[in-house]
Length: 95
Image 1 (tube, rainbow, N blue to C red):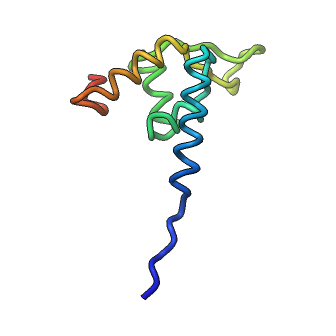
Image 2: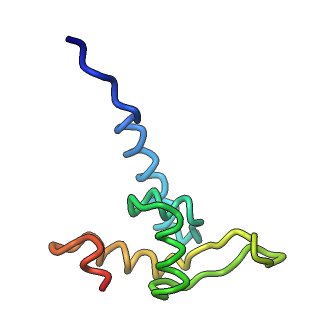
């Protein structure tokens, strides 16, 4: 029996994450989509981390408004990512 093909390209995912991490290291403010990929969560979860839990600072794209794109502070994201990757790791590190 033939093995089912994966529904995503793991090498492509790793390359995309590496590119996002390089942008973060360069100090770029990342959007919800990039943060979701970086942490392996959905955009709603990342939005909750920003707005309700206040885990990272943010700014909105110029023009503002409720539909404007949100960008997270790279300093806060790097600190949160380091905490996320600790031995205990994962969401337990964010409590």
